[in-house]
Length: 184
Image (cartoon, rainbow, N blue to C red):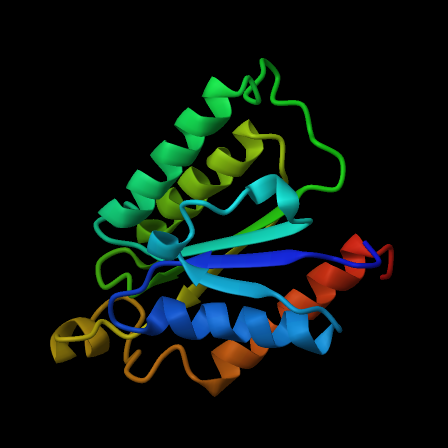
């Protein structure tokens, strides 16, 4: 992965997921690469197989990805199916890797509210032959409800993702890229 091409896709309403996407972008840049950062609604024409690493992120809304992300994934699945790229056994396409990331507030059951979104996005990539090399969950403030941001299972999550959360994402990104390049 000498000249690694990285695409970072995301959907964000409150800004939480966008902050994480930009932390990934920063980590990729620190690794010496020039990532492409786009919102899913701007990326319909992007050919995912043109990239060595594709990162896709969304918030958790009622245990699901938001409708624009679901629509993006469905359109891409339909495209790959029509081209015969979804095969029985989901064979890996060499050199094609993916990271999925999900922001969540989890006021009721914590991270369990986000895991279905990560699994959904991960299955998309596995179906088209990408190796899932990361499934990241990042706590984010529940904007518009102080009660849900302070009294939920996670306690006071106002201001998250915070600098510490984003630093962790940046470091995880660097480690992921290093591992893809054969480093430790």
